[in-house]
Length: 81
Image (cartoon, rainbow, N blue to C red):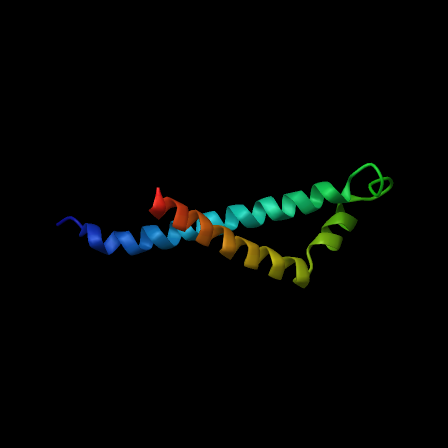
């Protein structure tokens, strides 16, 4: 007996949303990490110091809020187009 397509659809929506949110958070943190090693402030910094500098509660909350907004925008554009 094959599983019903309607049973898998909510799981696919949730997994798609989680993947989109995780990708936006990845882009946010990679941008912060690149900013830690620019020409002005990057001289003499270690990777461990940069990680401790960017992984804060404030940055994480900003990343979550930005990812939710980004997901909502992409979801509305996907429905609109």
